Amino acid sequence: MESFEDCIVFQLAKAYQRAHGILKEHLRPYGLTSVQRLILGVLEEEDGLAAGEIGQRLVLDSATLSGILERMADNGWISKEPDPNDRRVVRIFTTAKAKGLVNELRQAVIDSNQAVLSPLSLEEKILLKRLLRDLR
Image (cartoon, rainbow, N blue to C red):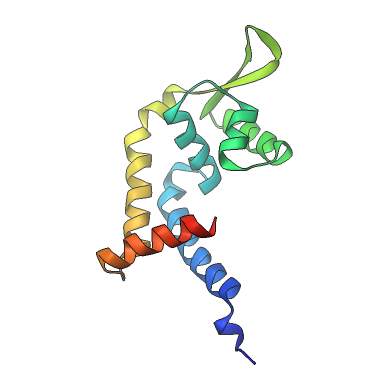
């Protein structure tokens, strides 16, 4: 019988906890969660997406996303505007606050990634990223 420590789900969960904790610490000064940072990252690539499009890209259900977007709007990170061509669609835009911190927020993610991957060699980092993509 295999030990619980040999269970891949356990190993992935522990690695996730460590990585998430590091990212959380880097985002703490901004009052952002990791999911909120992901949303801002999607909007950096294409501002003005519909809420549903953000959910599709990040694989988030609409109920979860709705609450997160509400909090982000309340905290001044995004604005929600009706689509002029279809009032049923809400478009999400980054605010001046978010745009003004884009470089700092990018650096927080870079620093987090470096901290998480620091024990690995370059080859191991490349292999880990490839394996994680394959598992998705």
